Image (cartoon, rainbow, N blue to C red; front, side, top):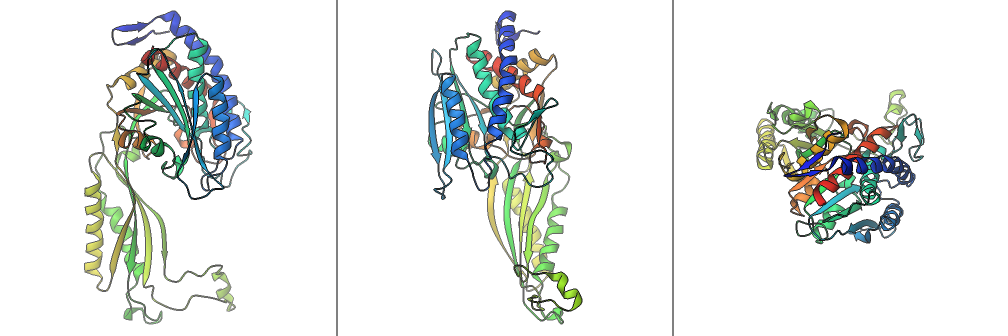
Length: 438
């Protein structure tokens, strides 16, 4: 095993071996604890069972020597309180402090499962269930990495923090953003952040692309459907905009190591489209035999709405994307007299990038090599995650994602996480805790 070096200091081989041995045992416990978390259906939307998840984590944190706090984030539904949990285990000094964060909300299971999505089944070397990869296994691995350090009898100079947070799948405003905005996790309290998202245990994710979500409403002129030339179709105009936006993104390739390869270019997705008359419960097939009831009247559509998801690169910037969108809309308006577009921005997230040579990245890379014998891969995410809140609101520059599981498993039916990945990630994070805080 390679010893772990931190600056001019070196973690003794015997000490590292002790940490790895404890973390191997804790990795097995982490998988079982993750299964318990999966059995709590903390589905978002609508935001179910957050309190139950937070309390399960809180009990475990307290048992492992953490001072624990429950923090309610903002929300409108009193039946579904947005409860986060934060634990701190101080060393001889308050700083440096390493924060390990995971969200415990999961997306709805959807169709196509062959196992119980909330069964937390362990078999054939895998943990199955919604959230197994994204990211209850990672949260469990982080918790048990800290416990492995404690069991190894290593006194730390700095502080370990662990949080379980809500609503990441819908933006994280009641979760990490709230913890940062209220001063609980900021650069004034915390030096490093690891988010155990499923990038596989030999990859370190150093950032993500930017996102601009916006709604476009096309407005035209109504006319009889048998004489469409007397109207101006908003649906036709919206279709032209959709194609124009696809053509406008260009072939720029980012220097950020985004995975998969296709995401190193700008991308655009038409999230939804709705136009003309929409009648609830309409069975349009009934019209084919002449018995249709409640069909829409024969009119040219005078409005159509697009919701667009534009992912952009570090080299582009949001203002350039806004100008690109406006250029497409202006061109369509010029070609189609009578058409007018309204644009509403729904979400804007700047790209993030943590320096490759910062202490956190280098420490994790050493721990990965010490555990696996192979060099770490530095990657970036195609989508955003809570890195944005730690950096933009909390002001914490050294933030990465590192955790067990495959990104491609996220949100899939029969989602699963390799048990060996959970153990390896537990070992790597345990070594990193010792390296940065001892």
